[in-house]
Image 1 (cartoon, rainbow, N blue to C red):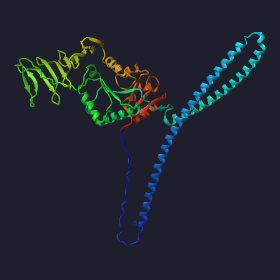
Image 2 (image 1 turned 120 degrees about the horizontal axis):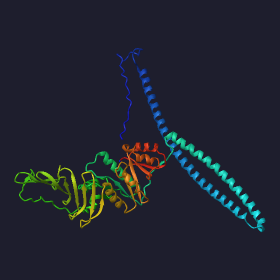
Image 3 (image 1 turned 45 degrees about the horizontal axis):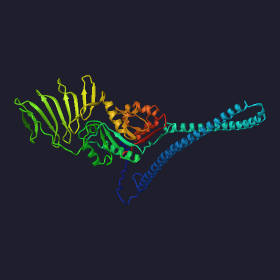
Image 4 (image 1 turned 45 degrees about the vertical axis):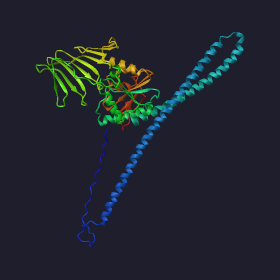
Length: 473
């Protein structure tokens, strides 16, 4: 989303030689029972001292935690009282302005109302004096509370390195939460597996709904990987998986097809030891077609060659449907210059053209293979799709702060979209983290990968912020 070691203390042991005879009394040159008893007493005293030291350390740690909690509680209470007093002072000042305004109005009354006016003015003056007195007392009270608050903040800063509060992240139960990952890998390390389980459980418990997953890379093994994640319990059974290519290619798992070896006139088949056709060769023994199979035995890639050099290749998905055709440059026959992504009915859904100067054009095509949307950057393409998925409901997006898409998401935040960045030890010094901790970002909440990251974030706070640690499993 640490390893801890404990250094022990090795104690030496005394070797006590037995006296040469059992009846001889101990002498100054022979260790006897008296010295053994002294040694045992010393060991016992040492152990008792260590236990007392351990108890003192535990009491110190407990008192430190209580002190911090008490200081934070006092700070919140003082801040609340200051806010209430400030509201009361503002109300009094408004009343003062109203009284003064009334005085000015009454002073303009006609002469035949002088007597009533004088009485009203005296009453108003008394009221004004009382209000001013109350205002002065409030000002003094506010100053006292502000001084107490400043004292608490100084104590917090002295004891814990910061005077600002990191409160837990609040999850909105009315939102649907999504975890962004460019891709899903088939083989997870133990650390990656624990991190994923921790994140899934953490969000599900607090949002009271399963954490969905968003991916944007092309991966025709995605259904099998997702099924394995579910089998291993890495994701909730009710969690949804959304992939850009599977969505736009309108794929529907469960309707497998069997790819056939292409037929090319004037060629003969070359087979491997398992009897699979791995190439079609012409009369000059030059390969015209090369075929690569999946470990399960189905056709995966079919590469078409021209004078022995690759021209284009067809990629078949796990359901056996033609999924992608990649055309290669005709100079080096290595670089992909065009990709066509097909729907299950073999119509082209996405067309990508890669220029020699790193230019890019992405076209989305309708069922009649007519373009209806064009992009000139991969990030614009991905953001268009991701925004469409998340825009269907109020959503929360959990994303690594080092993601290339993070800067784009900062512009999308609104009342219907919550973005929760994940901060790890490797990304603590990111400029985005510094901006968030300084209150210079629309991000108001962070997820820390572990306790050490949380402690560092808390010390660097320049504003109150929501921070939660994703617990390990």
